[in-house]
Length: 427
Image (cartoon, rainbow, N blue to C red; front, side, top):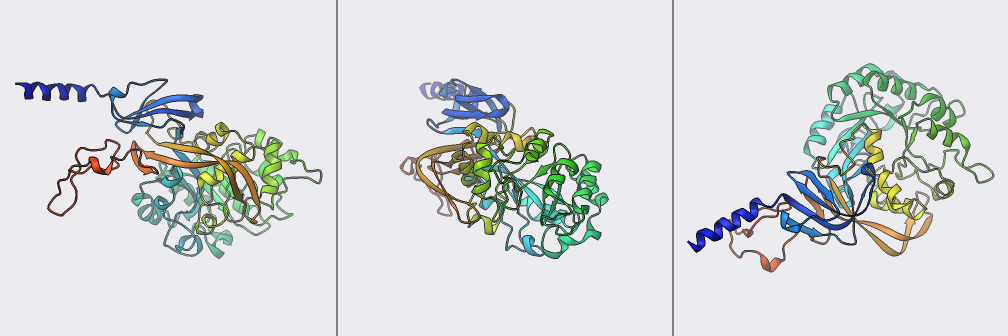
């Protein structure tokens, strides 16, 4: 009788647990919902279930204390290269990277490939990369049918807007826009045909301007050729005529941003210099989105990873709120995926928990120049769809000596209970 009552009491207790996971006492930054305060975040069935000043831990199967840490939507890296293992240059495994190897450890839950595939090879990209990744992988489709890499990017005969738009319409859930990159000729064809494809498919475009030429100026690009909502990446590239002879940000950049053109950081291995970024940010020219331009060269150079790039902007004078907004809600809006980049109740539980370290830190640009800073961002926990994929200090993990000592026939330990977040679940 006593045993029966105990089982009934335990069942009643479990039924009363409304949430799978409760992140307790963290400082929540959720720009979409104007939250910048200490809040608890509850997760149920892979969705955000509640965000409140105080949530009873008794209502959760698993409670993790994140006091002193910052809880925010999973980061969106708007510019990466992930078409690993196919074709020339960025697609031959020498420059592109496998997404899951680099995302979760930096708080990133969604990446957007910046035009590595074209319409001719997108379905290979989908099968090889998108379908195999735990990271959410979206993409811009290159205006060049063959995609990114080497001499093919100069082939004006392969810049046909029609098949590009058709492929986007076939996979609207995966392709978020059109990309043009590295074009070296004097013509506007790469940009203008990308815009035409974007108009046909109802999506924005992203431009890496390639060679800067007198015949097609950067000023004309952002004031005349790009539409509101279109993106210029590599905002702080040395070739951009950003700062005038008096040390001032050129007015046309503010004018372009005012008319709705979006400026993406796109750090990369050669596209970010402090001598432009520091005065620009001090004068109020803030990037709309922060991204890495992740590839094998950039990650072993000054760029490193998403949190390092975010830390640079934090130390150059952007507030933490601004940095988080440019890494979550702004890119979600720019690619028209507003179900991402926020912690609204009902949203997919993509969550990044970051620590802000204090001390003396050195940050490097693509020229090898150093900026010293006092703050550094580090990803402590990354959750995608309510599942933990990165847990730097084992906050979700049970103590080793609390585990059941039984083993299965294969010699593997049988865990005493499960972790509801999905880190591990063995019986």
